[in-house]
Length: 329
Image (cartoon, rainbow, N blue to C red; front, side, top):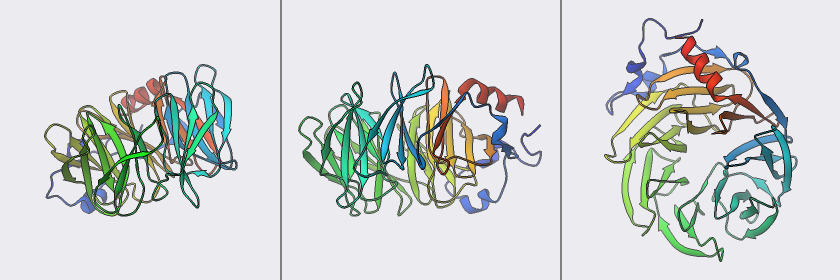
């Protein structure tokens, strides 16, 4: 069965700041496995493409094109309950908060859609939009946060009125915000940095070096984790100390996604639909290759994984993936 190559150890992939990420990515820490090994409890067709996943207490929400829409899936029956049609392409992530799903839409002009989580109705479209596709949106205790231009203008939006209450200037080329541990963390895809902002005051707190081209990010196990598109690496940033370590995944390129669940970090890109990284050690444990991938979410005891080009989302039981990886080593 697939497992760690004898010439390498997982610890060898944890990089010090002085070690070359490019060199590390030339190594293979784990033998690739087929995504077909993982049983899919359900597979749901949504449209021409399927992208962006958000998990709530009672639903899984997924974006699509053909139609431009977000879809609500019942995780107890694995069926689609509702389709909410949108005025443009959901192009920059999904976020939940204040009883709503927030959906950045690409178009001219770019906008921000608000969908009621209970009724499934489109309740508002704000004339505030993402700076670029593959951006992101996040919510804190009192605000919605979205980068609205290429100059790094991070807009703090009042969820009640839909107006911008503050602009925070982060490095130009930053596009993806995430709220965690009292801060907004913003990756700079045009560089190699992660910036933290005080979510209460909007004050800049720190800028931390990552791998090249960080875009998508998640949080868990006391850290913020960035998936770096430039070299396909993963950066772990300790939220208390700011110390960064790097793990080679060997999955460079555009697109992809990252999430935390079951004590693990999970990443996806097209043709390498799933990689599993230990949340305690940051070691790459298993990697599955094959068709599918591009976005995912963890919730309701499952991994919800899209196949972007097939327009589907699949449910893979979290315990099955964890056990399958453990059995292979």
